[in-house]
Image (cartoon, rainbow, N blue to C red; front, side):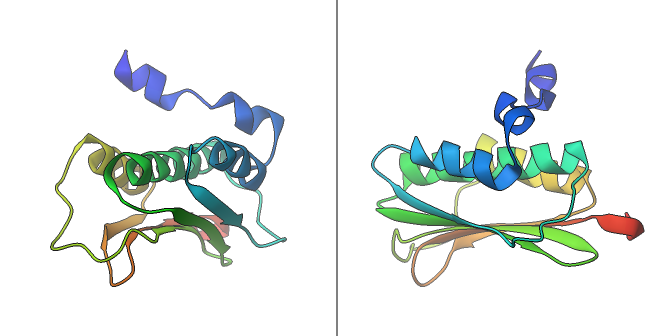
Length: 140
């Protein structure tokens, strides 16, 4: 059942673009101030890629709210002819070590890798960062 639910397409993606759906989710992120940026010429994405990026971004924001002292976060989509990327950053400050692996990090990593992508997450000098790159376009 978990697998089926996980793979369902979020209704927001049926009603609006990925950037708009992310903005809508970010507006509901509680006390966290979230900005969402995206290139204007974001390519058409395969549904599986769109769902994966949405789920990874929302899980990353959920983790910021639950596990960080951050007051702000950013979600940035980036595109090249061969790939689509996602960066989620927060201003929670430096951490004293790598993040403990949990269900959230594992599910984000799994979503990216299932699509042939890369996943990196952890603290940096100013807070936390999740970075995903998924191949797309004619080479996929």
